[in-house]
Image (tube, rainbow, N blue to C red; front, side, top):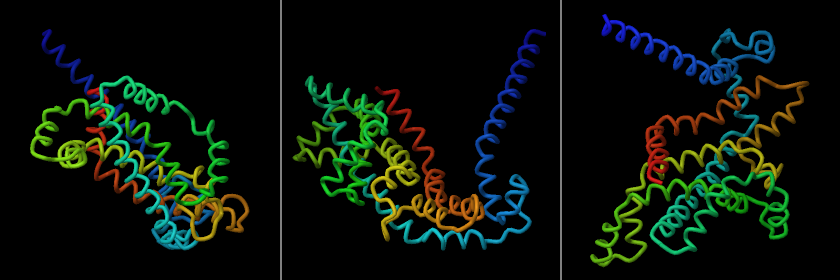
Length: 284
């Protein structure tokens, strides 16, 4: 009787858990479903029935939105900024974390504490002084924007790499040195391949942030012709649409095509993200 009672409670607990997980999944996916449905509707249809299915699944509004935000040109600019920023972040942060882990000096510990403390500093507190300095240096442009992304993203990246590198046996590096490898060969041929899950985590987390960022490109690039990211194109297309109120038939499909590339990337590498975050946190 007791076993049956415990088994019943266990099944009831599983049912409750599944119900909660389903509810959380619906809550999480509802905004994406709303975005998808409304990307195929006219402005009037969106206002009248925002949660209903579209009356027709025409790609007219998506095509128009892509044209209005100069999609292919903007995605090229965004892609270049994101790829170069992430490449620099991965190389610099992994090397910096490795050096700080292997060095037993007080300076290395202080530097690591500085990197971790920097994660707590909000961008807004540095925004105007930073922009003033970059304007005086003539770096309010795409190279300057990439440099800023590297500065703001390196703290979290170093934190993730540092936690995992501590678990790598130093004997592997010593063996590589004995075989005649120099420091860079030892790092990139022995250590870096072992950082796959953490590297994917760094790439995706920083990639989602840089790809979808609006504030920093707006402050650095602004309305400069020929050099706008997807989020900037969306913002300025909304301003120049000439439509009273919010042009929903432009906003919804434009947002949809803007986030599709990063969503696809996340779907394919999500298992590495979970593993990378867990490795960086548990092995601290």
